[in-house]
Image 1 (cartoon, one colour):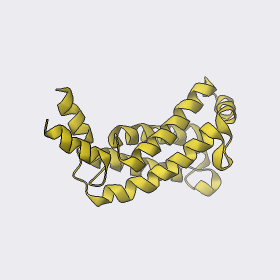
Image 2: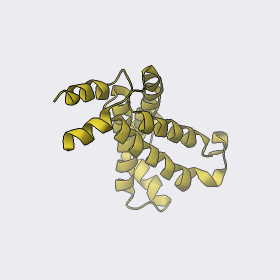
Image 3: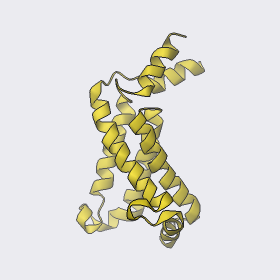
Amino acid sequence: MQTSLLNKIMQSEAGIAAFILRVPVGLVLIAHGAQKLFGWFGGNGLAGTAQWLSSMGMEPGLLMALLAGGAEFFGGLALVLGIVTRPAALVAAFTMLVAIFSVHISNGLFAADGGYEYALVLMVALLALVVQGGGYLSIDKALSEKIGRI
């Protein structure tokens, strides 16, 4: 039973399109997560992100920063590699949903005004990966074929 569930999560008939979608989305998420966790690419790091989230009422700020940064950084890494694609994309999509409603919604649609358009586009791309999986060029695909032979 457990092998069957794992195989369903990892199996994908999506082809090359999933690879074309998941690698750039994954790289963007890695960069955003690295800003939050490590202060790379001009980010505030964990302490700064925690303070910012606390200032918006998202408490405890440190935990929220770890969750958001971890979902983006490690979820993005999983997407680039194509491993546990569906769960990683689902967690990252939920993170984008939280970002939309906690940070961006009051600023309207356009990203230039601090709006939610960019987070929305990422969320929709991530939901597409939840539906289609990692695709032909993924570790998921290789593992699901191996599991299917067990």
